Length: 223
Image (cartoon, rainbow, N blue to C red; front, side):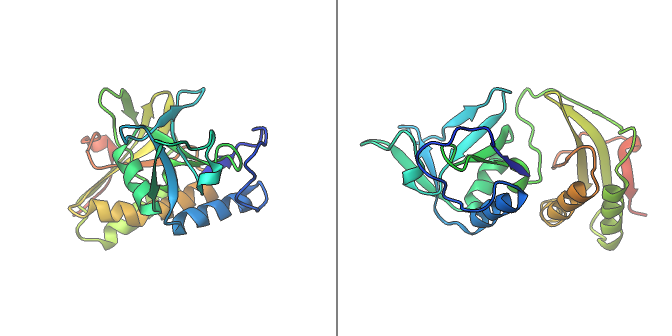
């Protein structure tokens, strides 16, 4: 998911993407990202990623379609790196506190949220979380999880809860399987589509650590 920053004053450089500033145009951004092999990041002088923080406290990573988009302009000694979409996926997998990628912040200003890069939630050290049961469980998502588990003999159990972290809510899923990484990669896009098409209240995060080892969170158990 992501949104164009509609209120950002347009300055040079000009927009890289020529599509409309709506969901159709944003899909063009997503399509480009998934195919790109030179997504540019500006690094610090010690070659570390520069992480920004917005007014709501969310952490983001700036990225650019080409060097002409970088403001202020690059000067001698500046360090850049080029990434593929798969490289960005690894960054978001390894940095659970990153909320979104801000692509071409000085022109297109497209904010692409972490759910595009990984469906998995990773917990940062010291992160306070609360887990409980949702008042109204999202039936389409639970049905999808149960149906998959019945067809995959490697799934021993699935746990489902409602997580609160940093004043944000999401559904949390743990799949008890030796192949849980592959299952998350397979089910993540399907669940995202259900979330978008069924007006489900909260997004869905997966975890590889079972924080819900309690029968009340169990939605499937192999018999």
